[in-house]
Amino acid sequence: MATTIDTLPNEMAAVICHGPEDYRLETRPVPRPGPGEVVIRVKSTGICASDIKCYSGAALFWGDAQREGYCQPPVTPGHEFIGKVVALGEGAGEKYGLEIGDHAISEQITPCWNCRYCLRGYYWMCQENEIYGFRQKAFGSWAEYMRFPANALNYKVPKSIPLHHAVFIEPLACSIHAVDRGEIQFGDTVVIAGCGPLGLGMVAAAKMKNPERLIALDLSDDRLEVAKKTGADLAFNPGKVDVVGEIRNLTDGYGCDVYIEATGHPAAVEQGLHAIRKLGTFVEFSVMREPVTVDWTIIGDSKELNLHGSHLGPYCYPVAIRMLEEGKLPMEDIVTHHLPLEKFQEGIDLVASGLTSVKVTLTP
Image 1 (cartoon, one colour):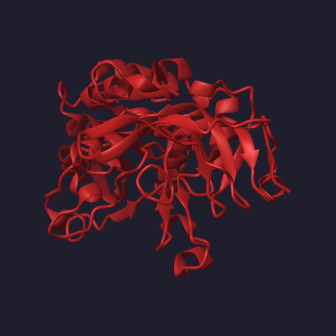
Image 2 (image 1 turned 135 degrees about the vertical axis):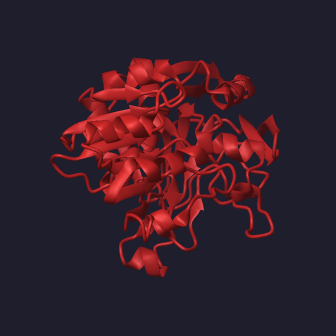
């Protein structure tokens, strides 16, 4: 049986992406839930680095000669969010254990559940997927209300987690998955390249694996200080020191065992190939703004590396929620800015500059 709060408004404010650098605050209809669907009143939503790359026109989102673009305008951006449940379609409450008034999130991907990957348990690689904030069937969270489709993966979030912190569940889940892909062992030297929100989540998750040595890299000394609070044993600024030399000196000349790339900059990929030891594990996480060119021979003939990609945060949301409940991260240092929805452009500019912010949130 469908349930809802007494009244839902007919219209809401929503940011609409019409094309690269063409985002507008508009009035749109408030969604209503169908069977198995959930509608939330968005309480806080984050701005991700991938949102910035989409805004700036990166080929992954808008296409080029090699590929079709992923973004389907007009669409509402936003895939990091927390909201209050205000309407439940028939069967949704029972399926997800949700009630009106609960705080809830939804995994970024909404799988088809019928393709080869979904049927084998790899739902995050779904062939026919929709992802919140980019596709027509899954409008995102830069709006006052949003709907979770019937095929979504939804979770109740404890109200003990502050709303602006709960926004971090999605990126933290992605960070946890990337760390899992690194297959960290006791005694390993692990390097996390990039101390933005996702890199900091990786530092926290990698610390839980108990490596012998955890090293954080970033061009911002302020972010490196946050990385130390998050669990990094050492922190180096590639703009000031020879990080490859430092890593080799710390490892008897061998190099690190695991290198996780979370900067989104091509230079960090080449840096990692030189910093990692033979037979090491390289995890590539970032969405790159442009193609990366490296000496591919290093991967095979020179070092026989294990090269792993990392996509989204499958099976990691409960862990991310628990980490935030237990205070595993210095969230007051990570979530640095809270802006009203109408100042979305200011938020985009803050994240794009990367100078004074770590995680920026919007409040619809």
